[in-house]
Length: 370
Image (cartoon, rainbow, N blue to C red; front, side, top):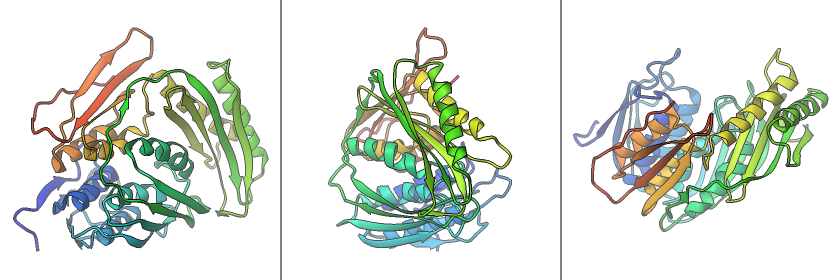
C-alpha cells in the first residue's frame, strides 16, 4: 500500500537509468524515507528493470528489512519502504553478466550504518561494459573512500565476463559513526602510471601483450618522463568464461587516482583496446581534476552523507554526476553549489563540487559544461 508521505521520484529524468535507482534506493534505506520511483528507464530501448537493477533493489531491501513492491523484470514503477538497517550476511546474484560493482555501489553506503560488520556475496560480471571493472573498484574507488573514513575488504573469488557472468566477490563492510568530509582540490603532479592487461579462458596471451604495448606507446606520446608498468597476465584458474581487457592507473603526488580501461570486443584488434584505455586515462589527466570522470558520480552519495562540507575538483561534470546530485538533494538536506572554473590551458576544464549536509538553503549555482 502506498503511503501518503511516500516520496515520489521520476526515474526518467536526466541520466534516466540505473544511477537513479542506485542512489535513491540507498538513500531511502539510510534516511528511512519511503520512495516510489516511476518511469524507470523509460527512455531506454528496453524500459524497466533489468536483472541487475532487480538484484540491487532486492539487496537493499534485504539490508534494511524493507518492503519492496513492484520489483519484477520489466517493471517501470517500484516502491520501497525501508525498515531498520541490519548487519549480517547478504547475497545477490544477477544470474547474468550484470556488474557486481554496481551491486556494491547500492549496498555499500547502507552497510555503513549497520550495527556491526556486514558481509556481501555478490555474483555476476566482474569486468563488464558500462560499469566499473572490479580492478577499478579495488584500486581507485576503495582507497579514495578511505578518505571519508570508509573501510571495506573486497576478496575477488572469480572473474566473470560477458555474456556468462559467473564472477564472484566477497565484501566485508565495517560500519562508521559518521562519514568525514573530504577536500580534494589540489592535484599535484602525476608520479606513477601502472596497470594490467589480461586474457582469460581460451584467448591467447599475445592479446594481453598487444594491449599493453599499444597502451604504453600511446601514453609515451604525452608523458615521456615516467616509467609505465603495465603487466600482461593470463588468468585461467579464477575466471568464468573467456575475456580480455586492460586497466591503467595513474597516481598523483597528492594522492589522487585516475584510470582508463577497456574490454575486448569481437572483431576489434587488441591494440585498439589498449589505445582506447590509454586515451581515456590521458583525457582525465588533461582535465586537471582530482578524480576521473568515473569516480565523480560514485562519490556524491558519500559527500552528501558526510558531516560537513566536502569539496572535490573535477573535470567536466558528467550527466551521471548531475543525476546523483539531483537525487541526493531530493532525499537529503544536501546543498550542492557547483562552480565553473575556466583556465587558459587548452583542453583543460575544471569544476569544483561542494556539498554541505547541514544547510537548508535552496540557492543553487548551476554548472555549464563544455
